[in-house]
Image (cartoon, rainbow, N blue to C red):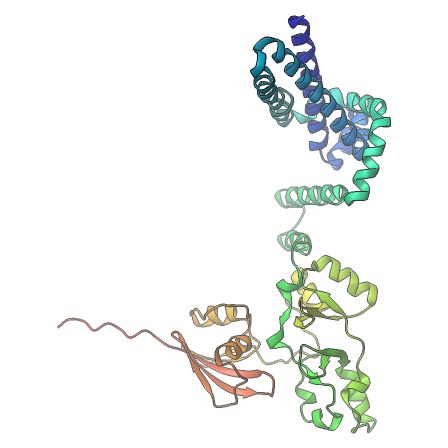
Amino acid sequence: MMVLYAAIVVGLLLMSAILTAVHDSVFQITRSHTRTLVEEGFDGAENVDLAREHKHTVQASVRVTTTVLNLSALALIALTGVSTWGRLGPVTSTLFGLVLVLTIADLIPHLIAARRPIKLALSSAGMLLLVERLARPLVRPVERLEYRIGGSDDTVSDAQRELREIQEIGKEEGVLEEGESLLVERAFRLDELTAWDVMVPRVDIFAWQEDLKLRDIVTTLTQVPYSRVPVYKDSVDDVTGIVYVREIYERFVGGELDRSVADFAHNPFFVPGSRSLTELLQEFQARRIHMGIVADEFGGTDGLITLEDILEELVGEIHDETDLDEEEIQRISDDVVECDAGVDLRDLDKELDIALPQGEHRSLNGFLLEELGHVPEAGEYLVTSVARIDILQSSDTQVLRARVTRRRAPEAKADK
């Protein structure tokens, strides 16, 4: 009887191992590679293609079947242990069975499939289709439950994996030029980056208070470097709308100087900072808008994100007709630069070969507001261990332009 039990256990584990190895080999091959094998007439390629086409059902069938086989083998091993080892039998045999199942039915099949996936898949994919037909009555309830719990994004993952492989092959074979390959890589990164990663931080947002009259902003209108400006009630944490600068111009020309900017505000679009850039791009396209306000967990404002910010992650820096021609950083001397306060601290550090303290802020303006604790006026300055920063121009809400002077470490005096 013991020999019979042992033979049954070995048979169950071997069937489980074979199914696992074939499953792994079939789904290691990309869809594009599978189609190539079919077109070239390889025996078994159509079975591989069919198994991949019914991926979810086949995978669920294999999971259910191997689980039943492994549990059956484990139960027989435990049953044998009771009669062989007495009171310690159940524990000892169960531990032994787990090691056996993990080794024979899991570890070894994965190693075999990894070594020769194509050969194994072509010769054995038909087995998966047979198992899928036999296990279909058991699998359908499991599939429905799995779909209701969380759905599946396997198709997206497969597509991304294949596109990455195509990108690498194209780059290696010279089909894709460096710039094209970089564009593909950046497209993948859109799904990994969030609004938090590229937004303009709250302290750097240029905005107007909603009760400002057109006559109040007309003198600075030509200096506004944006095509859209947020409008707020009491503070930037309470954004009530978005105004188009071009529309403000038109109203000004029409003589509507005593109307407030709130009269021309469009409804703002609020987004969570965790939203991926891919999803944001789709929402911007669907809503036909170019700007979103990144809301924090308390209903305030974390930052601002535009369609341009997202597109720049794809194609690099974009300049439009509203951008100022003046360079962000102007070199005055070896140790001195003048720059817009919206300049990225990393660019400023690189330009002067210094290391200003990094925090939640990304811009020089954010750094100055955090360090000083207020909006400085022209003429104020801040001294750090690596630089002196003089405020050249500011508004009621932010620093606009500054001069940064690198502080050189005093040279050590030579011994006489």
